[in-house]
Amino acid sequence: MRVGIISLYHESNTFNPRPTTLDDFKAQRFLVGAAARSQDGWGNHEVAGFIEGLARERIEAIPLFAAWALPGGVIAGDEFTILTQEMERALIDAGPLDGVLVAPHGAAVSESAADADDQWLRMVRARTGDHLPIVGTIDPHANLSALMIEMTDALTAYRTNPHLDQRQRGVEAATLIARTLRGEIIPTQAAMLTPLIINIERQRCDQSPCLDLQKAAREIGGRGGMLSSSVVLGFPYADVAEMGAAAIAVADGDAALADRAAGELGGAIWKHRHDLKGQLLDPIAALQRARSLPGPVCLLDMGDNVGGGSPGDGTGLAHLLNRPDIGKSFVSLYDPASADMAIKAGVGATLMLDMGGNSGPPYGPALCDRVTVTHVSAGVFTDLRPRHGGITHYDIGPLAVAMTGHGLSVMLTTRRTFPVSLVQLTSCGLDPSKFRYIVAKGVHAPVTAYEEVCKSFIRVNTPGITSADLDSFDYVHRRRPLFPLEDETKIETRIVRGHLL
Image 1 (cartoon, rainbow, N blue to C red):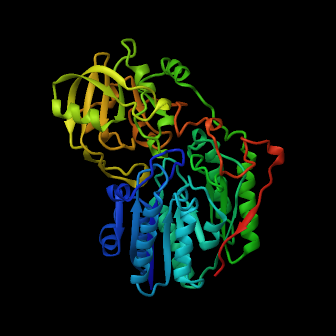
Image 2 (tube, rainbow, N blue to C red; image 1 turned 45 degrees about the vertical axis):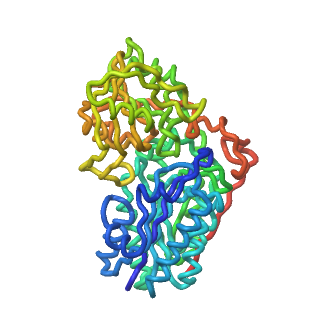
Image 3 (cartoon, rainbow, N blue to C red; image 1 turned 180 degrees about the vertical axis):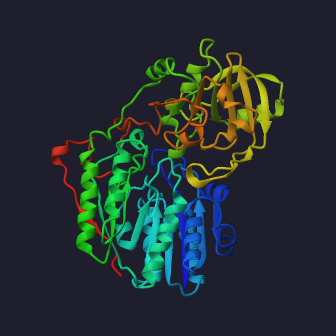
């Protein structure tokens, strides 16, 4: 038997004005046909899990298409068309298949298709026909749609945030499709599109309340007649009709059971709705709290969360930390121009730099100071342990580290940088344990790495296009009503059914 593998993975922030282009995909991953077959079997992501799981089942894996870009603005319309055309061509060229494993993110948006994941899944279903099973994984930050459920036979979401279990979920999906092909099961899928937003500040899956929801999902998914159950946290920075949390249930040939399970898990999410509202600290209050905590303290810059599509050049926390009474601290800023000036000046040079602050008022003005360049490098490093996203090899472009007179070390990067590995610091000769404060431009993703040295974490409600203050966004396309943005007494829930072989 031959099973095709397709992944198109992008978390699209509709509030970011810069479109994501084909070049952004090529900078990370854009593999078609033979290239996908030769290079996509590595890492801790779900595609590697697909390949591992199919090998266990003695089914031939046929990687067809793999595209991934760093979270950012919506995918440019013409270039989304190119992506889907290349995907379709690879699917046609593959010849007869017995099934397809898919890995959408679930929160991709294009200028030409607000429901970008829906569109390419619809194409795959049209090309394969109704008789072939399509099974896949999604990121829990998906905005699940009815069409995603209808176009697939089974979807399973990662259970962790930070995301550390992609490979396991990939193996799970491969096992489901193998059992389906052998005629052992008939995956029957349903979902409840729960009418609420889970605040990003509350989305840590190994802490309550999300921990309780994951336990409920495992218990429901492990019952007799059930194959899988997943909590979908949602992505509040994609202003689309599907925005919000959801519950998925996959039963073995029993639509009524799938309906009940999805309703039960969706009900558990709704029951925790007040616990899932954000608990927000502004920068001044956060720093006041941090002063009483043992260091190093990691300040999670939620408004400039690169993993949610922010630019990574926000200076608000940098200005607060660049003071003589703070102590040694660290921040990374995406600023190719300043990085280039520091690199050309060389290690040991002293110069004036205007650092960061290139993205407009929400992100603060440039940090202007005389700095000493302490390190320059190519920005290529490897982390022996897979971190959030399953990544082990990093290329963040040429960079420089510059230190102000007040002891603030500023890493200036030429590419936006996802802060999920401490090797980003240690490869530059920095000892993270020596800093009083470390700014990480994320919410939960950096924790797995940074908890090795940081004794305390504070999530800071900084302004920006990934702010945790959802009232600050001018939503146009999202469904209404949604708790907590609307009165909960006016909210109803609904069940959607999946594809049935």
